[in-house]
Image (tube, one colour):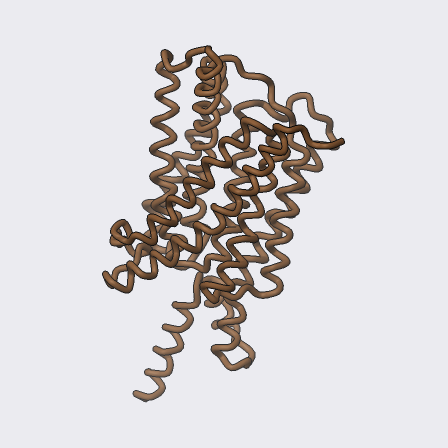
Length: 342
């Protein structure tokens, strides 16, 4: 069965969104590098000089255009059609990172990307259809149910622990810290964006939702979540390989967003057992791909740096734990210095 005119419009907008968002990662990282070269302080260690870098703002504008296109796409096409196409931004980002930033991705890393995309597609394909929402008050009732309030409380606690406990100690060596913060806040922002978008759509249709304070509350939550996501995504991009950050962030963000949606909108109610099992299998594939990506990051660079010699268990653990090879390089330089002094 062919696509309707509205679905075709949504499809084109979703494809444009993936292109813009995938490109924005590369443009922003170029801006971060340029800002670090001028200021001497990287965003990953608390520098904010990138806010004065025009190239970084070009990347931000590119990302905003992509997000707007993605937001509008949902007004024309169903989520089953639009959401899986978000995975294309990973491919765009990885290809451009290889061409422009010279950030090589190992073959097993490519397989990990494919697994992440395949798993995410399985989840989305089996995702349930949403019921029609006629008022922001209907969404507010969903957002204030005990189960979702428990999820929100858990997210807030985890974010505080990651920000104040883990980020200062291992945020620069473990890619999951910064991306985890972004993904957790992202799951809340998507729920708020959905509520806000629905309110605006209903308002444009003649059913004014701006008179309800809940609409403005959701707008405030969106602003807070987006600011936090932007800050920690910048730290992740400045600290780790772009080809690693993009897929891991996508996988974690998609997983947590679907979980939040299942809790808030009770998406699994009325679904068959086989459909739920298919979604769980999708999660397993996604997690497997994430682990593979995390274990093979910068493998080619570290391998060539060591001249192709086998790594010792100690150096292997350092490479698996480190994010972008800087710690590995620093450790080798220190070891060489110690050998010379001895």
